[in-house]
Length: 472
Image (cartoon, rainbow, N blue to C red; front, side, top):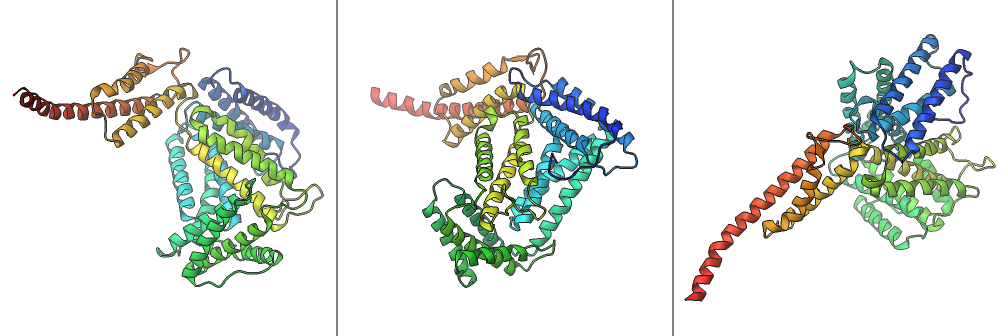
C-alpha cells in the first residue's frame, strides 16, 4: 500500500524512466493538493490521470513475464493512484471508477483490522457490503471507456475485500434474532471501553456504567464472574483472542455471545486497573495515533465546510506506515525492539482502527460536487435543513415569514448563467446535484407557503365574524 519495511525486489534499469515520470506526476499531484490559492481544476486531474495510465502501460510492457514484482515503482504508482482517486472526489467525479481506488484501499485495511480484532457487528459488514456492490456497478458502467489495467487493478482489490467480507459474514451467520441484539450491544460496550481507555482524564463513572451494562447481560446469560490479578486477566484475554480466530467458520451463536461478553468483562477490569497506562517506550506512538484520531474527528465534524478530499492522503500514509511497521506477528515494538504488552497493543490498535474508520466515513460521505461548487451546495444544504426544521415545528403562520428563505434561494438562483453555475468561466462537475438540492428547497418553500395561505383563509372568516359581533 505504501513505503514499508518489507524488502522490495531490485528495480529493472528499464523501469527508471517510468519511475522518474511517476515521481514527477506525484510531485504535481501533491502540489495541487497543497495549493489552496485556487480550486482544483478538473482538466488538471484528468491530465495527470492520463499520464499515470500511460506510464502503467509502459510498465506492463516491461513486466510481461514478472507481473507480481513489487519495487519502488509500485510504491510511487500507488501514491499517484491514491492522489488521483482523491482528486476525482475533489472535482465531483465520485461516481467514476478512478475515485474508487482510495476508498477500496481503506476498506481493505478496515476488513483486515476487523478480522484481527475478532469482533464486529453485522451492521459493520452490511455497510461495507453495500459499498462494495456499488463499486462493482460503477466499474461495470465504465468498463468500455476505462483503461483495462485500471479495471483489472480495481477488480482485483474488490475481490480481495469481498473474500474477506464473506469470511467475516460466515462467522456471524448463525446469530439468532434473540442473540443478535445482545451481540450488537456487547460490540458497542467493548468499543466504548476502548474509547474510555484513551481519554486524557480517566472517565471512572463512564467505565462503571459500561461495566454495569455488561454485567446485566452477564446475569441474563447466567455466566459466572471474571476475577483475577491484572496479569491473569491479560493472559486470559490473550488466550481468548486466540480462541476467537475462527478461520471463517460459522460459530455457535451462544458461544459467540458468551466469548464476547467474557472479553468485555476482562477488558473492563484491565482498564479499571491500568487507567490507560502504557508500556515503556510506546508513548510517542500513542501520541501520534491520538493526534491523527483527533484531527480526523475534527474534520468529520466540519467536513462540509473545511475539508478537501485530498487532505485525507497524508493521514492515510501516516497510518499505513504505522500499521506496516508492526513486526511479522502484528505486534507494535518500541525503539529497543521490545514488543508491546497486551494492554498497550490493544490500546494502539484501537486508535489505529478508529482512524481508518474515520477516513472511511470521510470518503464515503464526500458529496459528488466539485470543490468549486461546494460553497453554493453547502448553502443550499443548510437552507434545506432549516426549511425541514420549520416544517417539523408546524410550518409558518404567515407567508411573510418565508421571505428570508425565498430571498436566499433567489440569490443563489441568480448566480446561474444560462442555467449553469459558472466558476471562473468553467462549468464545474456536480451541476445536477446542486440543481436537485435547489429544486428541493423550492418545493419545500412552496409547500410551506401553501399551508400558510390555507391557514390565512381559514382564519379570515372567523376574524370577519368577530368584527361584526363587536360592531353590533
